[in-house]
Amino acid sequence: MGVPWSEVFCLRGRGLLLVLGVVLVGGCSGRPNDLSDGSYYADARPAAQGSSVAGPPASASGQPGQSGQPSARPATGSSATSSSAPTASAQQDGQRVGRALLTEAVLGPEGFKAVTPARAGDPRALPACVTDVDLRRELRSGRQADWQGVRTAVPLTQFVGVSDKGSAADLVRRAKRVNGCATEVPLASVAGADAQLAWCEKTRPACRVLLAKGDLLADLEVVANSEARSRDLLTQLAPKAAEGLAAR
Image (cartoon, rainbow, N blue to C red; front, side, top):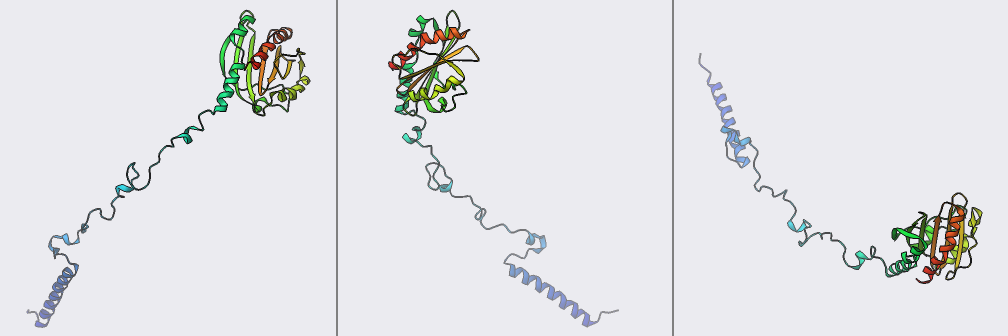
């Protein structure tokens, strides 16, 4: 059976329209008509690789010697060392304190030998009944030395510090309330001291003396096997400690 001519013309028209559509699409895309191998639908490669995601210029990297953000540099000069370096006043205080400490030349004939050399230290607290004097807050530039009896092994500790308020004698006078929790030792007036106070504790055989000269305060403690022995040694050594303060 033959196909009617009207249907042939219809089929040919549809084919012609299909071909014309493909040609128009290829021409509008601006790309070659390569439908045959499928490369038409492949992703197009950018014209300039990395042009939109390039890293910052070298000048903004912050490297030393380049322009852009300045690199951090450690502070130098006097402003960087002034906080850590001791001031001239602190050095002078340390020298004065060092000269006020008892020495082996003084304590050797008294039967004591050094256990630890003089070193930076903190003042010891006063007895609990002395509530209005805190030596740890009112003294600075303190140094401590420890001694021991050669034959008796009696420990002897000395601390010397500088008063922040200028007068160490005021600290000694305010500490007079120590009588409420200790037994005061009536020492004879020690030459070279502006003020003095000695006492023995009630709970252990330890005796202490505070000696003031100018803004220097010496704190000497002896702990023997009995209060009577500690008292005797304190009475013997207090004038030696006062001489050290006067010779600063």
